[in-house]
Image 1 (cartoon, rainbow, N blue to C red):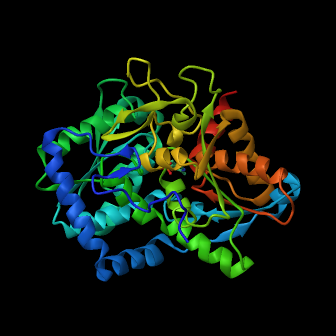
Image 2 (cartoon, rainbow, N blue to C red; image 1 turned 180 degrees about the vertical axis):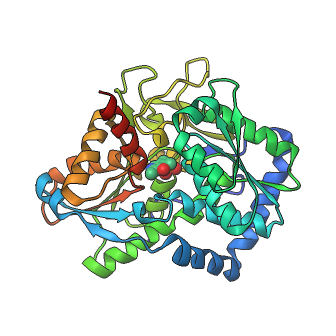
Length: 402
Ligand SMILES: *Cc1c(COP(=O)(O)O)cnc(C)c1O
């Protein structure tokens, strides 16, 4: 029962339709080929998957719950809203799932050092955690502006034993940290694995990441069938680089009866230049970080400024598979603005006793709006990608100084 227009993986050259590929300097082509070959070997080795599944069960605490949000449903006045609780993962979001998968693969390849880029620090903390558990030294590249803004995560990474490498060039944020990590990787290929933080980058990363995080959707699909005896009518997830969303959607793409919705960061509004991070709604086709995809850029191809209240959605591109899924009309992508995400953050906390990450609050806000337009017989499944402790701290200090 596959979607008529959908082919489940990238083609031989790493393309999802017109998107993806491998736009990298010559020096990285062979290492990416090796990574792809090792990935394909690991993926047909039951021992690899059983080690991964054991970590998810005994360390991460999976399967994560499926929680019906009965109070939020009543307030919205329509469809039943059901949450997939990725906030319940160890370390508080879905990112640990991808980090553990990639570190297991790196160890299998004989790598003795891990590097990663991080913006808000969430991916850096996930890799530092996986490195501590699996005994591999970790170095995290981070822009100096981001280090200042995300000092709690810098502290956590160092506590977990990782080295944080400040990047003072360019805009001193994620884009520069990524370039620096890639430069380091090109010089240290023999020993080092580059652990990417979302379903982005050159082939095979988007497919590699999706193969790990699809546990989100696979669990949710089985939990829905078990509890409700049927599939949801609508499935919603927020989209930064797109990993929690593709991990959720992957299980439902073949189900023609299920409508899929990705929610981007609308920031201060799509009409405000530099005021949002909605690559699919406000961007155009280009190349960033090794893949052809939708990018926020000027007419001359310079990467645009972005803004979102949630650091995890504040990225000027999107994973190539999402560009393809939009292209073939299988997934619809909408925007939620800062103020509506902040309102949903507070609403979910008060109505359900769940403080979501601000990223996840974008999906919750759209779910409420959509559910309100649907009948009470419909079911809307929403992935709550993470918990909001990190954001609560920021609101708390703003409240204390205002
Ligand atoms: C990083 C992050 C996101 C955005 O990343 P995706 O790759 O788009 O999933 C969303 N939610 C939370 C809680 C995050 O930490």
